[in-house]
Length: 222
Image 1 (cartoon, helix red, strand yellow):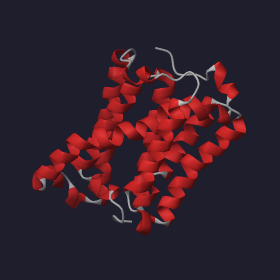
Image 2 (tube, helix red, strand yellow):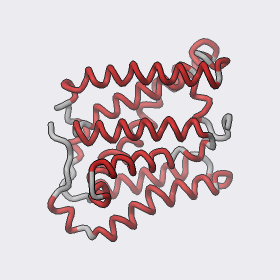
Image 3 (cartoon, rainbow, N blue to C red):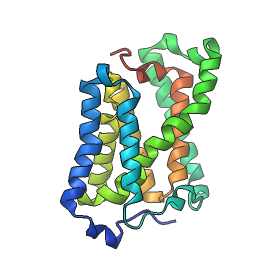
Image 4 (cartoon, rainbow, N blue to C red):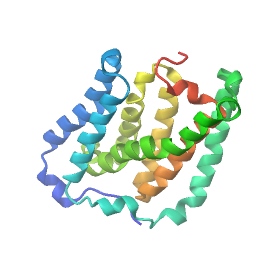
């Protein structure tokens, strides 16, 4: 399966309009979320972002919702996904041992019900919505604004990290920027939404299982 590319009809949507949409969706909403977190809470800005993003994706020329469940390309990339998961586990373990060794496997060992709920709910409630906005929508509608694949992938990682800034700690920013580079490159090369969802879901589950989940709560350790 080839990587998603700009559709000819995308030119019908002026670049200036798409630039304004990009700034509002990927920059303004996350910044407002950080500045006004006490008033807005965790979920309202994120829900607004997902709703607006879904509408924009639906009206993006050339996009079809069935692309999101297309399994083609997934099988060929499974060894790559396995390698990523192994490396991610090692990185997460290393960060945990250095930064918060007391949190090592805390959730599965001491808060098993909460851990089990996160394992079940996180892929559906968080991963699917994040990947929808940051991969198909971004690369279908906004990647051409950046002039090259490399620039688009870096921009994708930057705004992906920005949307996690409300957690108010550098670990969340660093990890999500690195993950954004990998997920963006993977989606651009493979064109597979199920692949990046799988990689993101397992990586996130590892974060909460191994012990870095403490950094993915607002107001966690700075």
